[in-house]
Amino acid sequence: YFYQTFQIKFWLDPASIDVSEDDSNACGGQDFNPQLSCFGGGSATVFDKAWKAFLTTSRDSLENAGIAPDIIDETLNCDIFYYEGSGIVLDVPVLANPNSTVIKYKDYLQYVTLPNSTDFPGLGLDSPFPGYSPIHFIAANILVPKKWILDNIEFAAQNLAPHPNAYRAFGGKTSSAASDQMNSISDAHREAGYMYQFPFIALYNDLFFTDTFPQVFDTSDKSNFPSFLGANHAGINTRGPLKSDWTKACPLEWTQKERDEKCISLQECVWGTKLLKRLEEIKEAIDPNYMFDCNGCIGNNRVKVTPAPTDAPTDAPTDAPT
Image (cartoon, helix red, strand yellow):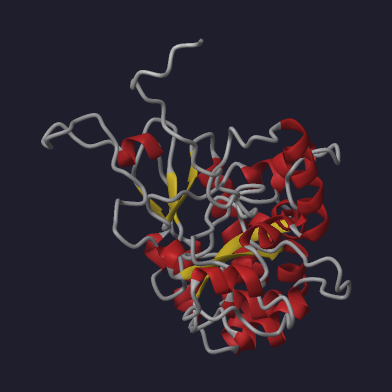
């Protein structure tokens, strides 16, 4: 988990390894291939330099752990190179495969664009690819708080590693700079280090809500369920725990009606109790007729009243007035 520890520090605590926030933010990841990151502008060089510096300062502990000195030397001597001033760092320069530090693409666009030999030259592939059962149908997308990751970095590096499964589109400048305390960004979204998919039953279960959830999120206020899911990647099957018992997962075998009645709603999991209530009040004031209504959005889980049918108009003649 040594390289995963480095990644956590590089993206979430760059100052601890002498990397600036700007350089850290310039070296993001993407969906198309989770093995790739750092695109252009010298960001790959910064990443490579920081990785080798981290490796150097940790050399004694690595050798004491049984890593052969020649493997460490080979990694330190791995060169970085570019095409036309750009490069992409391969996101898996593990000690066991030290020569995989860099692959050669001018930039990300060059990597994803289909070549002339294909049926659709110049276009890019869908990412993720279309499918009948996206991962969001079978897993819950947990926003893991940055502070918790750094406070538990050894556990996180081994069990919730940022590569290759974490989605790193949270935190950073955008979330903090945009806040005037009058917007709909949840605390979970604003304070996340990265997002992690927890498969239903295997990980998103009673044990998660009993042991893990109270450690990672604040459940001390029983009138305010905390936000912990990302809105953009939430699936139709995702709910919070039981309303009556926050240590019990919402059973998948229940009907949707029963789950909606007895489990914390998707909306409450995304925004938290207090922010959701405020957003629902704003929604009712601005759009009382729900002209804008979408699955999982504010107020979409309201009790919907179906208007009583009215008599259809008819062209049959009516009695003339007398």
